[in-house]
Image (cartoon, rainbow, N blue to C red; front, top):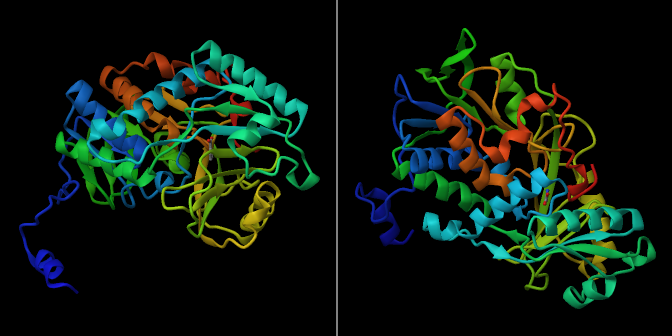
Length: 413
Ligand code: PYC
């Protein structure tokens, strides 16, 4: 080991400060407790401190920071949704993401690529037109293009798909981007920490204390905490937390798998999605192809990967880009997707006073990270749902006010 490194390893005064502190003990009381140190929880903590002056906040995670779905996704950002509620919400997220590196003073490698959702049938094209009209109405840059235009922008794509499912058009969304997902969690953690928020990793929540319909505390495997505000931002682990709260939600959990190839020279600028082929792919700054497919078709609380998934995905990738047949897959992983019946999230206040939910992300939680942060911080600070998330309240299931977003899914589910 080089002497310079060794010297720093043994030194108590590091030349670089740590990204965030590691408080030794939990305090007895906090103004707010956030369960889940993923992007959403950390962003909410940051905006609580920055926008609402609430700094006496603990973020707890049973594992490590960014180790859940934030670290297990394919890092796509877009706002070409189908519903008015969804488009407004994700458009605000894209706006926040675009200036986030600057704001958090951390390079998040935010890279605007352009996002294609390919249509292989006229029925799919009809949904693309529908989405394009809603998008344009709300000022989101998104429009339907012809196979000739797809070829001009992405000449390496086989538009005939090996003759199996010829492409008849695409929804094109120029602001579609990719961003370094781990860095988003680290940057929010550092920024929240600097404002006084405490981040406690390896701290599992084992129960919630509720009295007369009001949250009064959280029990953890490191001791109990008194608090009147608890935000659950734990994606696929939500059913465990809502069970502690005695709350019923319609969430079911399915695995969502993804993988990366060995690094290649840059050749794919765009993000390419095909719901018919159950495939999405982009190329990272490191040159790897980052790819995924549909959810595993069974309910399962598991983060294991399968060979089946890679086999199916590789076959479909080769339909679109046959010249990739020699490329090797380097890594694969899986996350637990918290799915709702209408494919919209569940956000905001709940029947339990002081208990707030940020869940139901299905396959699009990462792209909502900044807007979840701002809106959940507002909701916690004022005990009142932010306007952008009011349509996503848990009560919509009891009130038959669903927000049907399935048509905007990247891949068929
Ligand atoms: O909604 O863009 C998306 C997406 C990509 C991967 C999973 N979901």
